[in-house]
Image (cartoon, rainbow, N blue to C red; front, side, top):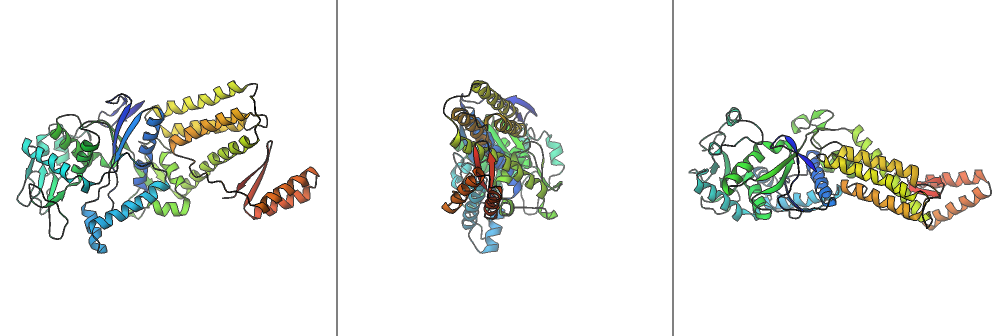
Length: 467
């Protein structure tokens, strides 16, 4: 498998540190509100990365954090008359509603910043001792970017260019504009922890360095997140981690592209900002997941009502195929088709097509194309009245494996027909046998009024609930 490494700006073969195991850290949300559709993209994309690596036989250690102490959380707590922990726990619970809705698998560990204060203090203390960080009189501790010669290597900008847009805000006592906070001295009324520099709380960037080291080690295989995190967040993580530990922080960096809304960059100030919850209440969660993986992850994607409706329609094609396989399996014959191996080989080529796409920097767009080619082959060669049970089972397994890697087709709660509807279908079948077409059509219309759609297939009558 090759992945595009932001650090080197080229595709590189993925070579894990430990054979058969991949260690991944993905930056999680700051939990002060509902997640928005911009948050949904890295969640879905890197969930697919994890699933695909596991599909290819790797053991994946996947860590994703919650930032549960932050200026925004404190502000929200003050607005709502709550403690910071009440706010963060509330929105962690809400996060899981949305994450579960989008079929995001839980990480190996979901650490919180507040659970790692000792590790954070340990790293900052080492940086101060080594001369990479300094404390100031109000209890703040800053990292000195000028001391790290490679600062800017992830964003590919020299320090002097980065400095051009930097400034020192009122109340900050840092020495240089590019220096960033590792520890913030407590202000009146704010939550705090005891430290060698007085009462305070961690800066944003340091928590990820602490959690990576604690749960995955000093050097990891892949660090991932949204493109907006490249600078300053990930740049600062590299600086503080490599200066503290003396080794490379992450061998590969993967970043997903932005989301536009109606071809304009999503922004609260522009009023084109949507939470996952808002969209899901109108269209469901699975179309959101589908949209997030419908393009290659580094490309920008566009959200609009037309596009999300197209995603729903595309999902319907997948569900129709899976339901047809279920129906065919109920009616398939034992034994084998005369050309069974040839048909299985044809299906195997779709799996190979899928793997080739996903091995090319997790190209989910081409991976989806392979799935739809598989659907076409199933509709053409497998859903036939003469198909054997073993062939239908084989096709079902192929379908489930590939859609499972993408995390799709996960709402297959098929409803049972009640006795009244079963009786009506039986009466219609009898009417058709007697060539009483008017009665057969009347029963079909009656069922349609109940939301039951009938389809006459070579294997018999197939029913579905109208959506």
